[in-house]
Structure formats: structure tokens, C-alpha cells
Length: 192
Image (tube, rainbow, N blue to C red; front, side, top):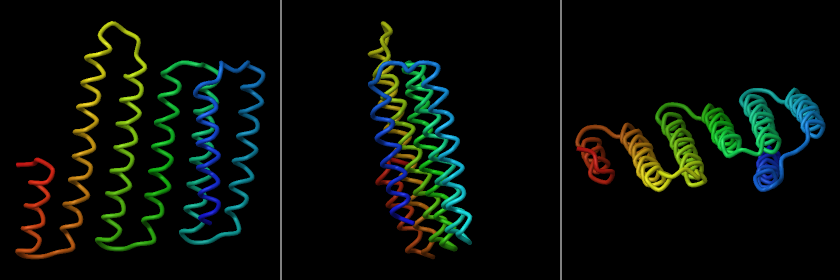
């Protein structure tokens, strides 16, 4: 299972890297790529049918994510725009989050809550990085201000996501220990 996950994300990363710098593809190539994506998705879903429980759910989420990312990357390669590349980066973040969140179903109680918060924090960070990259590639005249704002916002979003994870971890404690944990998290992440 972990080999499948690794290979899916390596393939997605290679495809994304190759489409990011490549010239726009032709309509025929795009259509052929979309047909290939559909066939691969069907095969990936078929692979999942032999599984059960949460392993099957994770496998299905991985197949969906791989398809979503592949389609977004094909769109980026076909359109050749920064917006399409940004959408592909978002698709990566969302697919990774969906798989990570599904994996959290293997846990229960606070461990599951922490897992979900960590998955969400990773998604927030990936989306923030995508936004910064998108703005960094903006060629408009006020791009410098936009880049600075995007960087500031990304740092704030990441800090908020990490804070939520830290507070969720405090929920496993009680009494003074929990109060101190929350207080430390507030100080660490600049919350009042």
C-alpha cells in the first residue's frame, strides 16, 4: 500500500515538473492525455476493489487524487498559463489532504483529531505556498506589493494552522496541564 502511495505521488510530481516548464500541448495531445488519465483512474479503482475497510477508502482517495492532479496538470500543460499551473498546485494540495484525512480514520479520539488537524495544516501550508508561487510569477506592475502581501498572508496562515494543531494536542490533557499547554501554544504562535 505504501509503495502504491509513493509511486502515485512520485508520478504526479514528475508529471507536474514536466508540465510546468513545457510548451503548451496540442489539442490532440491533450485529448489523448485525458483519455489516458481516465484509463489509469479506472485501473487504479479496480486495484482498490480487492481491498476492504479503511485501506480501500484510502486507495480510492488516492486514485481520485491522482486523477484530479493529472487532469489539472494536463490543463496546465495545454493552457500554458500561470493560473492553470496555480490550479494544478492547488489540486496537489487538495489531493494530498484528502488522502491524509482518510488515513486519519485509522485512529480514534484525540489521536484522530490531531491527525485531521495536521492534515489540514499541511493543506493550508501547501495552498499558501501555491499562492506565493502564483503571485511570484505575476508580471504586473504592482507585483512587488502583491508578493510581499502574499508572503505575509502565507506565513500567517501557516502559523494559524500550526497553532490549531498545537491546541488540538492539548485536548489530550486535563486540568492545569491542559491550561499550561494552551497557554504555551498561544505564546509560541503569537496568540493573545
